[in-house]
Image 1: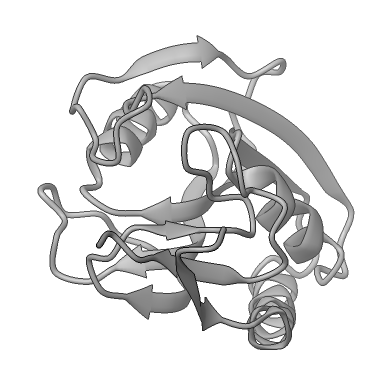
Image 2 (image 1 turned 180 degrees about the vertical axis):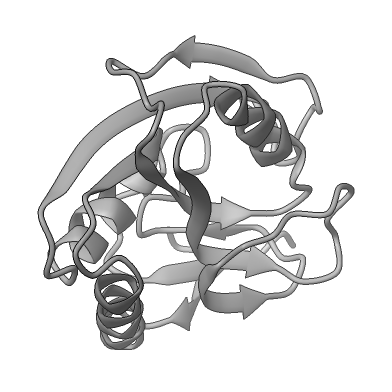
Length: 173
């Protein structure tokens, strides 16, 4: 995108995901793990993170919507695609591209907790500092960023730019 500035390089992302993968491997040693990607944004993060986890990992996906074409969350959450499998008794790791208000994730966590997983944790590439409207306990965070609107590495603007190999700030002038 011509009106954007690189915030986090592809190399920086690779290093952080390798570190997260090593920690996840250690934390779930001897256990099975189900990684749940929140579509569409998390698919790139989850693919790269999963390759850094040295465990037998299963995958599933959920699709939720709280944005539409807007750049700020509406606070209204809809599950567009639910999990394909039962999670009762399983270690579940939700993988996100970005957490901002926390409203979508809070709803998702409540929805999954009632299904009685053995454990339920969150891994995210980006955590926007100081703008959570609800408290979210995130176990694995690669980067904390400010309130700016970002694209790339799974993050989109109106459906585009997810394929950028880095995270960039959209210049809003």
